[in-house]
Every structure is written in C-alpha cells, then in structure tokens.
Image (cartoon, rainbow, N blue to C red; front, side, top):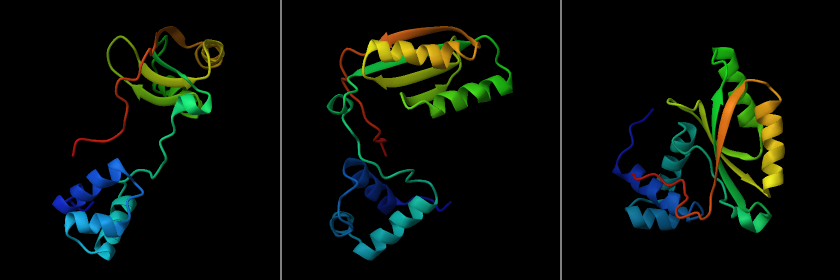
Length: 153
C-alpha cells in the first residue's frame, strides 16, 4: 500500500464530509489539479483506504425508527462456532454493525428495526434458532446524540 501523504488525508477529510464533492472543488481546496485528485481517489479505492461510496440514509425516514444495541454471549466459542455467528450476523439485514469483542460479551451488535416486535423476531431467528447463545442484553437507544462514520484524520 502506498503511504498516505498530507494531500491524501486532506482529500479524505473532504470526502468524509461530502462524498459528492466535485473533484475540481477538492483540487481547489487542497491545491491539486482535478486529474491528480482523481488519480489519488482511484488509488485509495483500489488499495481499500476508501472502503465504500455510500449514501447515509436516515433510518426513521424509511420506517426503521428503533436503534438497538445487543451484547451477545455464546455457550461455545470454538472457531467454527464463532465463524457461524459472524456469518449469521453479517447476513442479517437488521444488523448495521457487528463487532467480535473481548470481555463478558462475545459480540456487540447495532441493529435498526421498525419495532420491538421486529426485534423479538430477530432474536428468535438469530439468537435462539442456532442454540449457541447463552444470553444477550438489549439496550434501546432513546436518542442518537452522535452517529457517524467519519474518522479523525
């Protein structure tokens, strides 16, 4: 991977704020030509520095007003069991983020659902159907004080 220089970091800061910023405007802001900005962006995409170009959708505007955090503790933690749960959580559309963690819990999940009934159905399918979940703790968000994916670079 090519080391990131100050121009790359400046470009990334702009793209994190607004990924639709024209390359010409980025170039003006960082003192590079638009073609140079384009080459740098393409390289960072190819090298995986820029992981995705997405639209951030407001969950409540599309009928998913409930954000839930769940700590999941497994009964068995063999490599196959862990891989099975990773796959199950990765494939679940309700799961927005999933982390395999150390400590009391094995996984931390962030879910976005339409209702508590939808979350209950998710728990039946994802936690109970496989039979390897010892327990889980649920935390319901009352307000999204800060939510984002921008890195402090």
